[in-house]
Length: 175
Image (cartoon, rainbow, N blue to C red; front, side, top):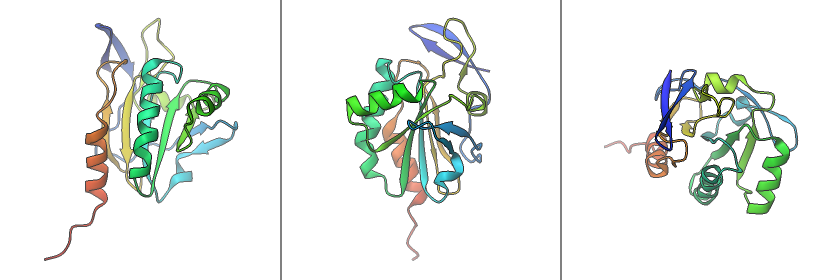
């Protein structure tokens, strides 16, 4: 079990957070149109998975906006933002904030995601929410970057994620 902070208070997080080199767990999440979305939908593309407590939390919205700005720089990459919010809330925020480059996904019918991705907050009063994290997968779903943000209200290291994702996918010229 991992521990993260919330305003200086330790919060327990259950499940197994992925490590670089792991193969990502499959998942079934729900999009803003109430359609089931499996990880396999994005096979052959790189994936950036941002896990946020809520799009209505300041940190969740900040992360979504930052990723919206980064998304055009990432070739052959889909950017997924996952939260416990309802698909209706995700659709509302996407429209209000102009988040059109992201796939906003809900754990509405995918509660295994919490444990499988090691982001399940177990301490009351936040139990049921997910800890802030950023995970990048290559085209065959191998984890290339994984950061469990140490403060739930903190943002991840976007630059390190982008550098790692691009470095892994860029072929080295032969001499």
